[in-house]
Length: 509
Image 1 (cartoon, helix red, strand yellow):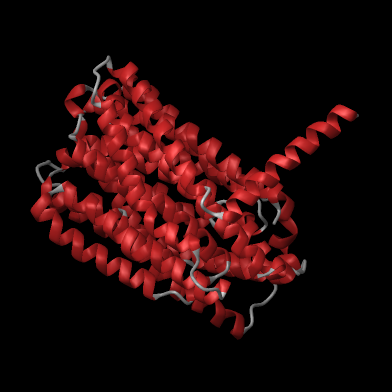
Image 2 (tube, one colour):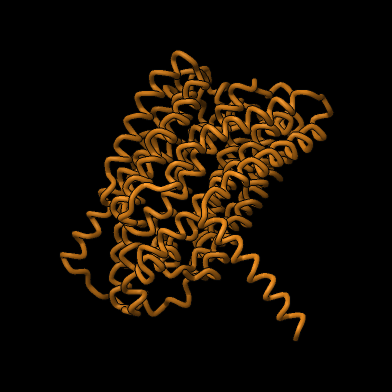
C-alpha cells in the first residue's frame, strides 16, 4: 500500500476540514446570536433536503473511480480519458436534474417547517444554497479524476479552502450586517472558488482532457452494475442522516431542530472530518487490493478496524462528557440538553464513524455491487424505527434508532460480505470484538458522564476537565481492548521497532 500517499491524503483532508469545521461553528454561533435559533434550524433543513436530492448522483463517482484503477495502473490514458468524459457528461445532466427537483422541493418548505413562517427571504436563501449545491456537479468530474489518481489531497484542498472562505465571510457579515439571505449567498462564493481551485489542481492531467477514448458496452455494463449497488448505499445513507433533520423539523418544530443542531452540528462535523480522513484512503487501499491480494487486504482491515474503534471511542466518549459545557459557553446556557439525548447522540455518532471503516474497504474493492442486502435492510430499518419512535419519544427516538440500525444491521452486514466475498475467510476474533464494541462504548460514555457530573465549574473549565476525563477513560479502556487483536499488537511492535532502528541509524550517522 502507498503509505505516504495515504498519509498525505488523510492528513490533508483532516487538517483542512478541522479548520473548516471550527469556522462553521463560529458562523453558526453568529447566526444564532444575531438572527435566532430558528435560522440555524432552517440551515440544517436546507442541507437535509439537498442531501436527499444528491440521490440523483446514484453513485457514478464511486463506480467510475473504481473502474479507473486498472487503466491508471496500466497507464492507459485513452481509457482514463474515456471514463472521465463519460462521467463529465453524466454530471452535467445530474446538475440540471438537481436544480430542477430542488426548485420543486422548495415549494414544500412550509410543510417541512412546523411552527415557523416561511418568508420571501427564506425562499431566496434556499435558492442560493440550491445553486451552490447543484452547480458543483458541472465540474465535479475533475474531483473524481484526482481521487482515482490517489490525489485526494488536491480535491480536499479545493473544497475545504472554498468552504473556509465562505465561513469567514459569513462570520464577518453576520455581525456587520445580519441578514439570512446575505449569509446564505456566500455559498455561491464557495462554488466559484471551488471551480478555480479544481481547475488548477488538474492542470497536470491536461493530456487526459484532450484525449477522447471509448468505453465498450461491457465496460458500461460493469459501471451500471456498480452503480446499482452504490445507489442503494446512497439511499440508506439518506435514511440514516437527512431523514433525522426532516422528521424533527416537520413532526416536532424548527425551533427544536435548532436546539438539537447545536449538538448535532458538532457530532456530525466530527464524523465528517474523521470519516473523510478514513475515506481519503479508498483509492490507496483500492490500488493495494488490485496489486497485493486478499491476505494483505485482510491485514489492513484488521488493523484499521481496531484503530477506527479506538479513534471513534476517544472522540465520542470525549464528546459525551464535554459537549454540554461547550454548548453552554459557546451558544448559551439556554441551549443545553439533558444527558439522555447527549448519550444517545454520542452513541449514534460513534457507530456512524466506525461504520466508515467497513465502507472504505467495501468501496476500495468494489463490493458495493454484491452486498445490496445491507443497504436495503439498513434503509428499511431506519424508516420503520424512526417513523415509529419519533412520535413516541421525540428526538430521543430518532437518535436511538440510529444506534440500533448501525450496530445491528449496517456494521455486521458490511463485515459479513467482506469476509464472505473478499477475504474468503471464517469469522475470527475481529468479528467478536466488533460485536462487543457498542456495549463497551456505552459503558465508557456512561462512566465519563457520571464522573463529569460530580463537580461543577465554570463552563469553559468544565469543558476542558470533562474532555480530559472522557478522552482518558476511552484511551485506557479502548486501548486495552484493541490489544486483544494479535495483528494490532504485531503492527504496533513492528512500528515501535522501526522507529527505534531509525533513531539508532540517525545517531550513528
